[in-house]
Amino acid sequence: MRLEGKTAIVTGGGSGFGAGIARRFAEEGARVMVADINGEAAEAIAADIGGIAQPVDVSKGESVAAMSEAAIAAFGTVNILVNNAGITHLPAPMEDVTEEDFDRVLAVNAKSVYLTARSLVPHMKANGVGAILNVASTAGVSPRPRLNWYNASKGWMITATEAMAVELAPHGVRVNALAPVAGETPLLASFMGEDTPEMRAKFLSTIPLGRFSTPQDMGNAALYLCSDEASMITGAVLRVDGGRCI
Image (cartoon, rainbow, N blue to C red; front, side, top):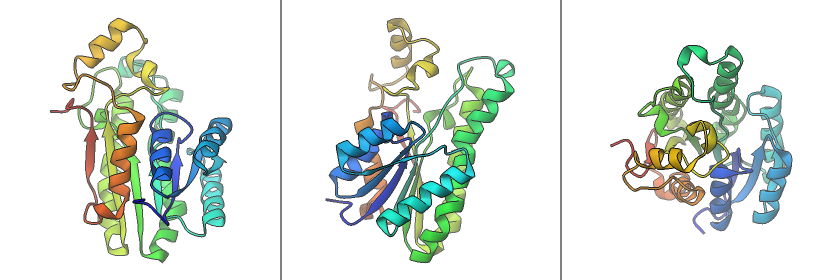
């Protein structure tokens, strides 16, 4: 029960890595808000783990503010925020990505971190404690061709994590990031361009441990960084990538 008495919001918690993180947090005693643009998916995970569901579009300020207010109203306080919601554009030459796709990737992957900070950092500062975890990507550490603007959005998230950590440390708020390699999530086919045995084999050949990241891997890593066991860790980017970035 490493998170007993803690409360958490997990964005993009209705599937994939977010669902794995939400499940792991609940297993360790946290009360969890599962926030997702897919309200039905959020409700299904929340029902399964004994949490609460909240529909949210993390790219919209009003929606993020409503999520934060609902969590504080339900829990009394929010100790942990996991910025997990994310999207990508399809693999393409950088100049061929549409302006619409570019704007959406930056809004969901980057602007969302600003919006959740705007809504929840004052609350955490007032409490003098908090843990924020941003789910970045190996794409932000070791970029791959044809995912240029997705790579850039995750690099932005890593820099934001470090900047937030420095600024919020005096207030007792820790900020860290996870950098997973691709996993069995709804985004996998988008990363690869097409989900075929040949594409999977090609992708897996770049990962020394020979497998994708799993929701369980991410849940375990997130649990550590958001628990009191990691009380001296802030501004870190933990690679959950099977050695891909070596």
